[in-house]
Length: 252
Image (cartoon, rainbow, N blue to C red; front, side, top):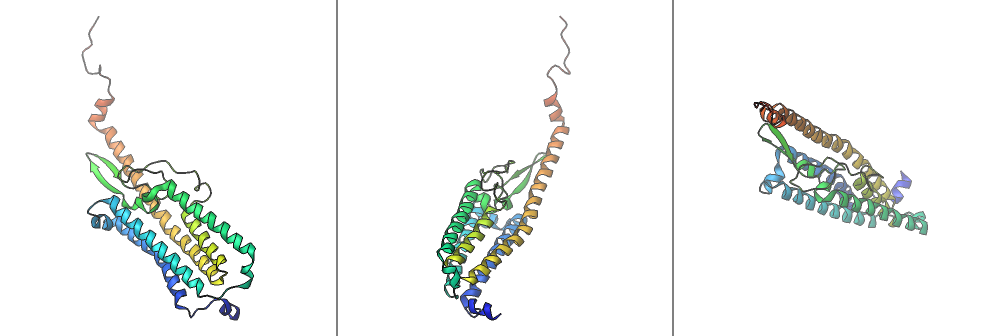
């Protein structure tokens, strides 16, 4: 405890503000996204336009991320430094980690698009059309392809970089950026906060992945039911029947 007290100043208010911001962000977007999926809160606030609702959520999450990073840097500036981290090798390691983290984040956003990155799949909406079900929504954040926010959710997965390196490049890249900043500031406190970020993201994934999987499982089930109803309908049988069937044959 004595060694920890030398390098982690728990009396600094900026430390606890940074911790609160780190803990708040994933909690916020998971609660808001689930409210959108169940009650269409953001869509209603966006005048029943799910695209603009998702864009509004994207701006909010992005802004909260910028604020969190700023508070994190302020907290590290108020904390003691670890002399061993002053070596050039650690500075170079910090630069490499930051470059890798930024590459994972930017390439992930490029692969998924804005709506795919910022929880667009929670804006999915189902409506009936005749006897079939059609699903409309954003592109999935969970490694699905890019597309129009109002188009049907695409079926193919993005398996190219960075998803062939890590299944959650946004979270991995963000964690590496936190770690790089801690090394650059020579801050043991930053290392502890980076561990907190990693743990929080793992907890978030344990909730997000099953919920998102359930969204697509329900979508696939409704689609299969809709196709079955279409196949069993009289119109489908007529469409699949040759034109000569049911007509008197002309004898040559």
